[in-house]
Image (cartoon, rainbow, N blue to C red):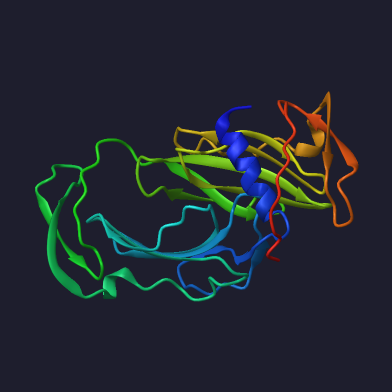
Length: 254
C-alpha cells in the first residue's frame, strides 16, 4: 500500500460519517431531478455548463476533493463550473460561459491548424496558460450501476481517469470521473460498514470497466479493529492489498 492510499484512508476516516448527495445528470436543457449518493472520496457536488462548437451541455455530479470553480475559455470550448459541499447544493446550473462579460484580457489559443488565434477572456479569467500534452477523455457517472456513463474531457493534462465502487452498508455506488493525477488512489479500503475499491488510469476512456466489487475481493488473512457508533472492539478481515491498520482520532461533524 503506497502513501497515496494511506493519505486517502485518513481522509475517508474523517468523511465516513456522511455520504454527500448530489444531483447527477448530463443534458442540454439543464433540467435535473436525478440524485445520487457520492462514493467514498467524492466530497463535492459540481455543476458545469460547457459550450463546444456551439453545442451546450450541462453536467451535474459528484466530484473529488479538489474541485474547480470558475470559467475557462479554450477557443473552441468554453466551460464554467461551480463546486459546493452540502447535500444537493448543485441544483442551480453553472452560469452560461457565453454570457460572461469580456474583461479586456486576451490569450492565444490552438485549433487543429495552429496556435495563432486569439480569444477574449471574460469574468475572472486573468491569466493565459501554455500546456503541452493531452487532456484525457474519461467516462463520468454516479449511480448503482455504470450503465448511464457519458464521456467528458478532463480540464487539463494533470487529470487521470478513476473508477470507484463503494458500499455504505448494503448500498452500492459506482462512480467514474476525472481525478487529479497527483494523489489519485488505486486500491481498496475497509472501514467496517464502508468498503471501497478504486482504480486510476491515464489513457483515454480507460475507466470503462468498473472498479472491483470490494465485497468480492478475497481475504488476505490480516485483521484490524474498527469502530462503530458504540465502541472500537470489533474486528474486520482485510482483503486484497490491504496490509496495515490505522488508528485515527477526530470529530464527526455530521
